[in-house]
Each structure stands twice: as structure tokens, then as C-alpha cells.
Length: 114
Image (cartoon, rainbow, N blue to C red; front, side):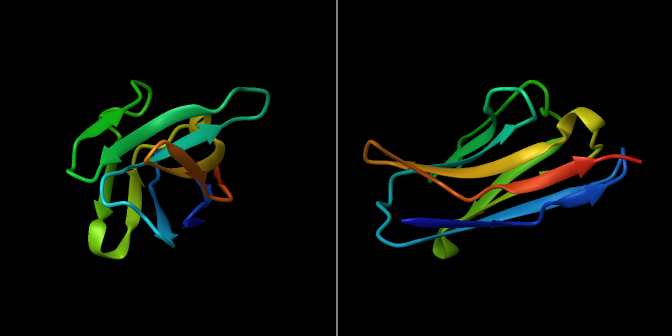
């Protein structure tokens, strides 16, 4: 399984970004796809996760500002982030969990700065 993330970049505070992550390979239909992030000097943390059935969970820090969605036909997960803050600056990693295995994308940098 391979995950290819895209959509990071530099955005001003209050701005928006949409991250995308496409999975390829042999993927079991029952799975979770999600986004984690790691800021400099900090541990990787969960941002949002969505099951193949559409159940969603968000970190409190992004709840109300972010929306995770997925297209099962394309094995793609999206993260729409609005009202971005400087503390959202991090490398964002997409993740797929299925059948006891974890798969990670390469990470995409999101920088929120004026």
C-alpha cells in the first residue's frame, strides 16, 4: 500500500487549505483513513480520522475548523482546513489503518504565517 499526499503550502492566518491523499495497492475495504501532524519539537498527533463507513473524529484543536472526507471509489481522503492558525503549522501525514497494519504517506508541510 502506498499513500501520496498533496496540498500543503504557505497560507496566511485565517486562510484555508485542502489536503488530499490517495492510497494505492491492495486495500481491504474495512479501513480508517486519517491525518496526523507533527510540529517541530513535538510528537505526532491525530488531526482527524474517518472510517470507510463515514464515521469521523477530530482533535479538539481543529474541531469546527476542519472537515475530513473520503472518496472510497478513489481510495482518497481529504482534509479541508479553514481559519488556519500559526499553531497549525506542521508536517501533515496521511494514514491508512487496515487489518492491523498502519501505512503512512510521505508528509506535506503546512505553514501558517503572515
